[in-house]
Image (tube, rainbow over all chains, first blue to last red; front, side, top):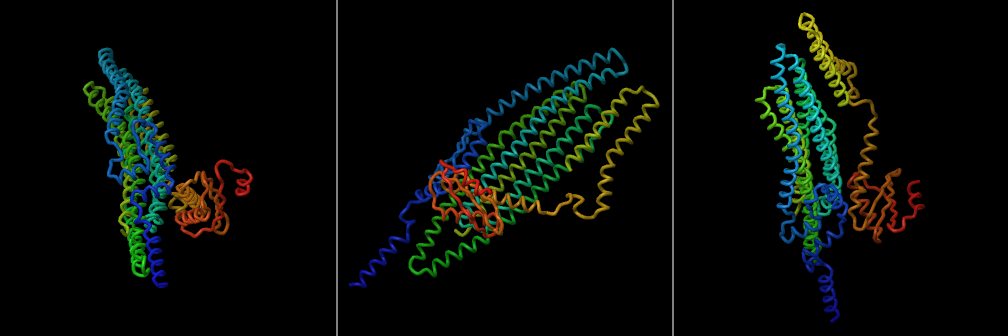
Length: 386
Length: 164
């Protein structure tokens, strides 16, 4: 009789203690874990960064986690598209006004040169009038180029801030979902690459492109002695630097990713095997519980990375569209002023369009790097163990 | 380095502008041809001389300090360490109910952490969490001294004690 009681007590203990997880639904587990991690600072940072675009609403981490769990779409694409169309319309209006001033100037220059041709034969006055008009044009163009440059700089700062608030949370959740080695390896490397890429772009690539553009503009202003090849050299240096950074970055990410995930896979599988085999009665339940907890924190980690990726997309989309609109309008201006026959004007506009194109390329590649970083980190640590 | 390049480009642009002006003002004739030649030569010199001097310097001193400046490497490790501590602080912020966290490094692997919370927390768990965060970022096993404050009443004396 006593033995029977002991047996009943043992079975009750096993029932009561071990499979805590079986009693709960996945929903409850995820929401519990979402509450145990403090994502407020990330959410606050994200809403601060997206503040200039009030039409776009980026959901919080816990919202995304529950949406992903219930197979709902966490982010409305139509909202973003309508905001982007509005932004394009606004950009077209402001930049179109600038283009109108430029058209007016170039028409004046053309009229002046025809008039002076009939007044004096040597063409010196025509040259002077053309120089004056081109100098006004260059002032306008440099102003808008300065605005674009400041925008790109601000974008870089914003994206670095986002990454700095995203990475610690991501690393915590990576460690929580079992990818301990990946978390340890990725953390310093990610911080280093993010800061290196931003620093190099801000203090090397952008200034070199700016200098090259200024030299080109001076060459169009006073064409007798021009330094076109020096401009080419500086621009080439800047863009080669960017290309090298990108190669380095992709290489580092690939190597670190594979190394970390292999180490984690081995550790986790060993842990599960040990729990299954050597813990006598509750071993299976224990390893199942471990898997459920790891899986739910993986869901949360993916929600965090979705927030990061969405924010990067929103932050980058607006400036890139603005740069694209500027480039397009400058190209249009160059095409339209060419038949007027004032060579300095359309060359200046062409140079500005090319410079905007370079800025576009730089912004795009830096944003792509950060985007890839988030996705690589998450996919690498998703493959772990389970 | 970029500032140096900027200086260089600026002086080149000034020379180009002056040369264009001279070219513009001078009357047509022999003088103008020679002036153009001389401006071209000056531009060539101004463009090449910094490059020449850099190559010369590199040839004289063969160490890497010619590129990077003289340093002991200590500043970098201090910077890296403070960055690691900042990251650990940011990771502690993801703990439940934590409002702010300040970590100072002390001698011999000791760290003192001051954490402000909005609701009571279990101190041993939090301290283990901070230890783990520091272990992830610095790669060593730290020993920490934790003091927890609730955000309503922050005693200035306690803060003072930790900082001193």
